Length: 93
Image (cartoon, rainbow, N blue to C red; front, top):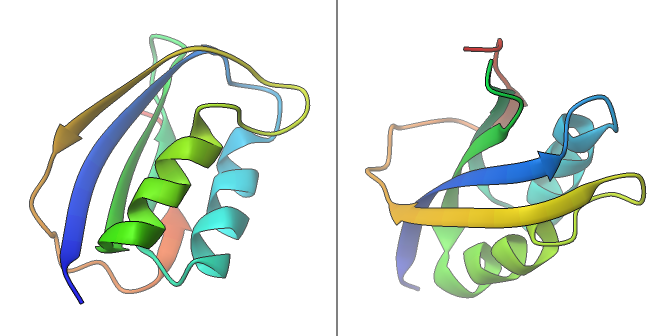
């Protein structure tokens, strides 16, 4: 099993629509590790770590987001595994 770590930045109407809680649920369903947080610029940032197929499925899910979200752009960059246990929300930065 190849482990992949990606940093995602999701841009659009993604705050105030339950995006972080939805992301946590989606990540846990896929047995992923990492975190999600709001950013002061109005975007959402996530670190997603796990099986490469599950990570790619998570990227696809985040491209749409929860029902009330309107994702305009999703940026993805390789990231280092930060040793996260589980998947959780972090404070806004």
